[in-house]
Image (tube, rainbow, N blue to C red):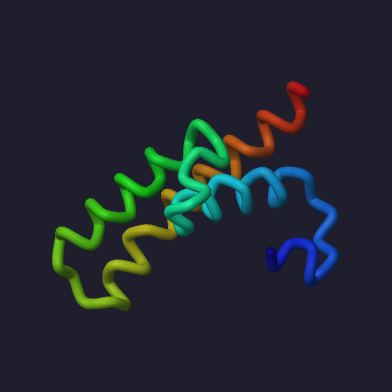
Length: 77
């Protein structure tokens, strides 16, 4: 994972990376309980058939929210 490759020590980024990895890699779909949900959201955005740049702009707040959730999870642990 890129988190290890770049030695990112932010625990929330690490958690987010696991969620995203599970959504991206079919063999690891159960990496986290949230991964299938993130996949559903990503597939939903793809179904909107927006131009790539518009789709990216629309998705960025989702990932910002996911990171904020990850921060809360790390703080609560």
